[in-house]
Length: 202
Image (cartoon, rainbow, N blue to C red; front, top):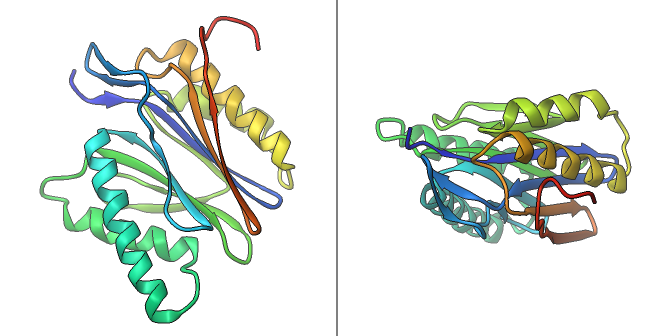
């Protein structure tokens, strides 16, 4: 009853990845916030989108960001997305007796773009696209029906927005806007989409 809900996703496209999440933070039947942020930039080439308890995801992202920055100072080169995901997996598994109530999608680009899904116990699964949170079933249906390899940035972004909007129409714990993080090898940008009503046209 009191598990927080959300919808977060990650999609690989030809030159990078797009990560997205809704802005609503609902705790059981109570709406706590309409402006929460669940998409985070960890390095210049790696980000994460989360669903679950806001405090747990913020704590996890801060710990991982500090560790990764220290590691980059040691090795003097960027840490690739798979290493970031593995570090996050180790941290989440180490907290397994009192698990962090968050599901995470890590996405980024090294030699090629990649996406990794992590559950609260640190299981790690690589994929080309993924969704987590209470709106997963709806969002993944939209993505699977339209995803294709080699999509452009525009196509992937539009698909992410379409999937999140579909989830927000059916999942009461998701809504109030969309945060997007688009990561390419030479550019990283964030985008906020405010939705006055999920039932209104584009």
